[in-house]
Image (cartoon, rainbow, N blue to C red; front, side):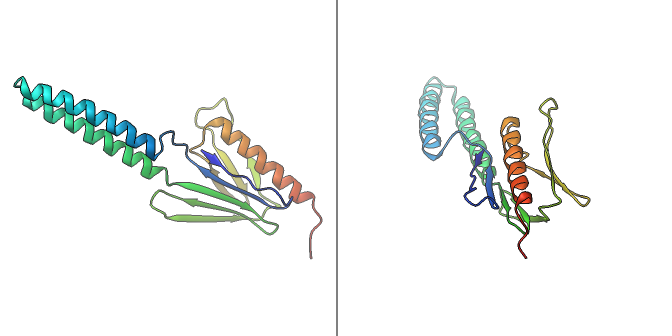
Length: 165
């Protein structure tokens, strides 16, 4: 998860929530190089002792591992952008394919419902006028709680500011 907060203006809050991926491009390249090298050596050994079908399964394992990492990295393109302005709270949810869903709330009426750390799949929910939106479902619980606190604090600060005409 990556949370970027910009709160220089007390009436503005921005956050970009991203799923955490522990293996970057360079790490992926190093890991796959080692896996391919070891697998190639093992495949050659089985080939030379006459168990050539085993070599095919070893190389299939490498291809499946590579594919799993590629799918994982594709899913990492997902993000949620939360922007609080004086006139609206805008939540943009972008999936791994780039499809976007934007939901707008009136910031003076929106409620931030913190997830319950005791419940396994408890969600951070924004609620206003019958509309409900789960935010940051891919975040670990500690980060969901921290984000809920930061957004709630920003909403509270903004509500205390005098209204501009």
